[in-house]
Image (cartoon, rainbow over all chains, first blue to last red; front, side, top):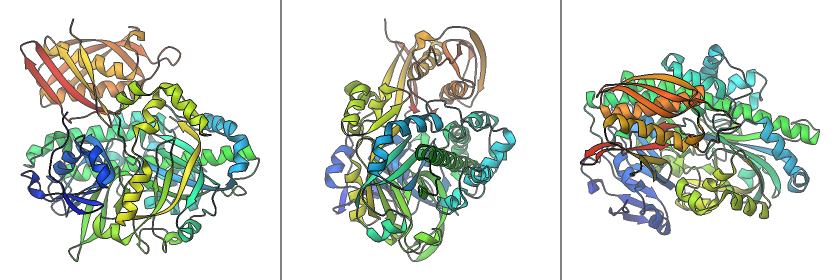
Length: 485
Length: 139
C-alpha cells in the first residue's frame, strides 16, 4: 500500500496537526506527537489516515490524538487517544482493542544486579515454570463460573482475597485494580468458556515478564517515592492483559455495534470503528462488559505478580518482605474510561479511549495514590526486549492537552511477517545472550517478531513525550532476563 | 494452480486473501488460511468433525463471524481443523462441518495466537476468475 500523502501542519518540534478539512466528515483536527524524523516512518503506513478516521466519531472532543509510538492498527491506530462527550458521544470497542486492559505492572526489589546475575538462568527457568505462558496457556487457578464472575466484579481484589498479593498492591494499581460498573450479565457464555481456563496466564505475542536493572535515574525525588533508590537495582516488569476472555468480549460487542451503527445513523469511514452512543443500550452494555474484562486483566496481573514474589522468595530463601518486593504501579494501556476533564474552561465528563496509550495524571489528582500525590501518577513504558524500558510520571500538561494520556511503548515498525523473513529467532537469542540477557520462550521462531529491529527505539518515543511535556522521565531500566509467552 | 490463499503483511497484525471458484470454496479457503496462521495445517489429522451454524445480517459479516467461530473453537476447545465442507451458504446463514483434531502439543506447533478476525479492510469481491476475500486478523 502507498504511503500517506496527507497534509501535516507543524505546531512546534513535537506537535503536528492534521487539519479538520483534510477529509470531509472529520469533526475535529488530528494532533500527532512526534519528531520530524519519526514522521518519515509514520508516513510509510496508514496510521495517520486512521487518526483522521477517528475524528469522524460523534461527540469527539478537541482532537483525535496520536502518541509518538503510533502504528497502523485496525480502525483506531495503536497509540491513539480519543475523548467523547458522554452526553452526545459514542463508545467504540475498536478504540479499546481486543486485548481489553492489556497493561503493565512494575515491581521493585532490594536486590542489586551483582546479587541476581549468578542466579539469573535459574530464576528465569523457575519463573517460566511458575507463570503459565504461551498460546492458549491454561492457568494454575481453577475457576468455575461463579469464581469467574467474582473476578469480573472484584478484579485484582479477588486475587488478593485468595492470598495472591497484598492489600497495598491494590493502592498502587490504576482504579485500585477494579473499574466500577462491571456486569457479568453482559458477558457471553463463549467469553466465559475462553476466560475460565486462562485466568492467571501470561499468554503469547508481545506479552512478557522481564527482570530488569535500573540503568539511569532522571528524577531522584520521583524515583525515591517509587522505591527506586539507585542504579543497579533489580525491577520486575509484567506485560499482559485479559487473554481470550477480553478478545471474546470485544468480538461479541463489535458484532452488536456493527449492526447498530446504521440504526443510529452514524457514518463511518471504516467498519472497524463501529460504535454506539455512550447512553444507548449497546453503549452501556459494552462498558459493563469491558469493565468485566478490565477487571479480569487486573486479577491476571495480580496473580502473576504473586508468583513472581513466590519464585524470588524461594530462589533467595528470603521472604518477599525481606527482599523488598513491592509493587510500584500497574497501568492499563487498552481501555476506555469515564473521566472528568476541563475543556475550554468548562468541566465535562468524557469517555477517554486509550488504545495503546497510558493514563498520565498529574501531581495532586484525586485518582492517584497518596504516596504519589506529590510526584504524579507513575507511567510505565516498556520497550523491546533488547533495549530498555522507561518509568515516567504524569503532568498537568497532559491534563490540558491529551486528556491525561501519554505513550505506551515502542510501537512496531516491522510487520510480524517481515520480521520473520528478515530475522531468525536463533540469531535474536544469540544477540540477546551476547548482551547479557537470558531469554526463555516456548517458541524460538517467534522471537524474531519481537526483536529490537521490529520496533521503534523507545528512547526516541519517550524523548518526544518528555520534551512535549505530557509526561516526565523518571528512570530507565534494561532487561537481564526475559520470558516471552 | 492458483494459490488458495495468500498472507498479507500488516504492521501490527496479519491478513489473508483467500480465493475460490465459488463462494463456498472461498469461505473454506479463508478458514484454511486462518488455521495455517495458527499451525502447520498438514499435521492436522481428520479425527473429529464439528458442526457449525452461523447467522448474520450480511455475507461479509458472515465471513468475519465464521472465522471468529473457528478462533473461538481453537481458543476455548483447542480444536484444529484443516478441512471444511459447507452444506449451505447464503447471505445470512452458513452451515458447515469442520474436520480436524484436538490440539496435541507433542505434534502441533502453534505459530501464532489469533485474537480475532476484524472488519478492517474487509472485502469480498467477485471477478471473472472467481471470488476473492480479504480479512485482517488481530494477533
